[in-house]
Every structure is written in structure tokens, then in C-alpha cells.
Length: 300
Image (cartoon, rainbow, N blue to C red):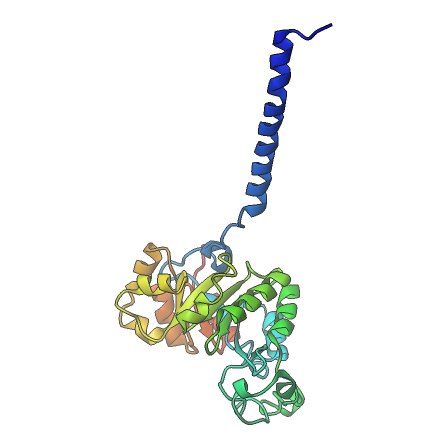
């Protein structure tokens, strides 16, 4: 029996309807796969913005440099075991572009070696003793790689500030982000640097990671400087802030966070707490926590 005209029209419409459905589903899949994770918020990583007299979070300088040789795994593990809020470490590149924990441009001060880190390969750096200078008990302690540090941090549940020393290019920045991602640490690490270009070197690989620009003094337009580095806050010498303590509230109002370095006395802690800074980097994290427990209220 021949099909009716109405049936022909219905059959004609079916391929078009199927095509529309397929395209709609494909669009949803593409949108889902292409959706970027939500950018790490300041509150997620650093907690609520502090008000004057609130306790700032505590950042243990150079791992746990007061507890064990700075920027070594024993120092990091000691800081984690002590329960400090954040661990701060310094990372620089070897001659073969492997990131290792080192503050100085040379290895002279904290190892038994000599020369610039940038002129030594990882194999050469791994031969150095990075612990004897601190105490005989740490003889033979090695300079850790960033990967070794991230493995320890990842299993600890703690958070960290990773300072980029020297100039990092896009390749090095992308490798750093890949390491954070491999250890599921993009949401628990803030990348910090004095060098805006080094911060920008990590931007292309991840908009997710939180960044802080380190400053020795306050520029005329702080917001522009921070935005230019793709950062969302500053880590600044307290002496610069002490001249303009009202800047802390102004930066909070602009949605930026304010951390200060490196404060080790009760007087400095009282001044920064009065100003309402968010975090304090210190060589005396245990004593700072004790001071806060007896001196500072924390209603957050």
C-alpha cells in the first residue's frame, strides 16, 4: 500500500530531528569536557580575610628552618608534624632544569659544595651534604627535588607556599603545574615570586592555581602590579606595610590578600595582627602559634 503524503512528511522530518538531537548531545559533551575547574578562591586556600586583631595563619619559613636544615625533607616533615598551617619552600632550577629546594643562588651556605646552583646538574647537587652545617645529626641530608617535596606534602594534607627563585620560563612553569596536578595539589599550593614574569610563566598552564606577588616595597598602584603578574595578593616586607598600615584594609576591600615576611618577635606579631594581615611568614612558627593562643582572639 503506498505511503500517504502525511507519512512521507513525517519520515522526511525524522533525519533532521535525529541530527538536531545528536548535535545537541555533542554540544553538551563538549561543554562538559571543556569546562574549566573553578579557580581556587582566596577563602579556600587562605581562609577568610582577617580583620584587625584576628589571628593570622602561620607560615613556616624555608620548610621548618628552625627545626632542621632549611629546605630539606627533614625540615618539611618537622613542620608538618608540628601542625603549622603552611610550609614555605624555595625552588630553583639546576643546570639541567630540574627544580630543587634551594634559597640561595649558590650552594655554598647550606651544603658542603661550591658554585651557583644553575651551573650544577641534578646529579651533582644530589652528591652534596645539605645537613652537616645545621647539626651533626643531619649529616648526609640531601637537597630534595620539588617532586620529592610534593610527594611529602601530598600525603600530609597540608598546604604550602612555593617560592620560585630566579627566572622561570613557560616551559619550566608548565612543568611545575604538571607536577602539582600529578600530586593533586593545585588547590593546596600558592605559587609566589618576586619576579612577575616567573608567575606569568605558570599562567598558561593553569588558571586554577593561586599566585602571590612578593614585594619589598609598596608600588604606587599595587592592584595594577598584582594584576600584571596574574596574582591575587601580595607577600610583602612588613616594614613597607608598617608605613601605611591602612593599606591592608584597602587591599582587602579590593579582594586581595596580604601576607608579610619574615617576622620573629612579639612586637612585630602584635603590629601585624593589629593591622589585620592574613598570614605571617616566620622562622619561629611554634612560638608564634603559642603567642597567638594566649594573645589573639580568633572568631573565624
